[in-house]
Image (cartoon, rainbow, N blue to C red; front, side, top):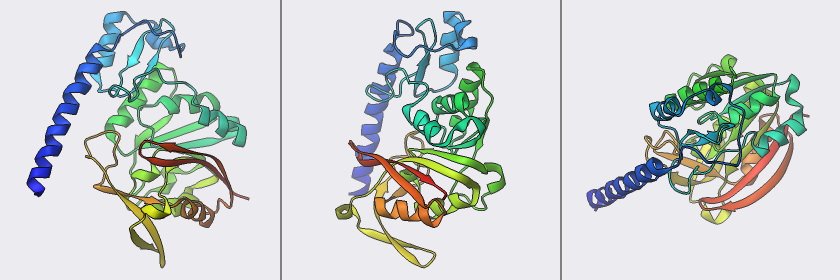
Length: 284
């Protein structure tokens, strides 16, 4: 039965890969009217140079230059298939909450640098990390074309030993990462070691009726929903075979244990993969 299910999954991945490539190949290079940006070193490129730039790396999201041309690519139909907004609304919220002009921001999970650019527009200093080397490279490239030079490097926040001196910052910008971790509790508690002022987090969480398993951290038991990560080669998945989705009250409690005792849930929303929350945590 196991081999049969594996063969079905391989077939599904092959079909998805074909459809994905077909959609990306047909995505227009130009003619985008929304979300145009002044991208100095892209605006200057000829169309043939821009096509080459888009093909050098396996981009999974895109921005648009002032000519309405695509820099990057979509992931697949319906997934990052529209121009990205810079800055993201959550960066505006973060700036309202913490006044980033004098702050050092750590972006945990930079993906392909879209949010990194938005953070660079507001923060005094930005450090961006990701567990995938290809995302590190894409972030460096994209930021350079936007004329920004954040500190960007590969870092798995669950790896041990973790050099906290490299990731020490005032504020953590933490979007779409927690629900991909195999030890989310340990990570939340770790944040108190290297984040000095506060955190903005956007993450999925588990409902009470969904939790089936527990694990122990520092003598305390935490219930969780086990989520099977699709494949480590898939850029939208985690890098381990599974992740643990915590309940919302445990996420908030862990942040409080880490020193972020002033918490506020900004919004809750229901998405295809489950409930999701946007929250702010601050030190008193």
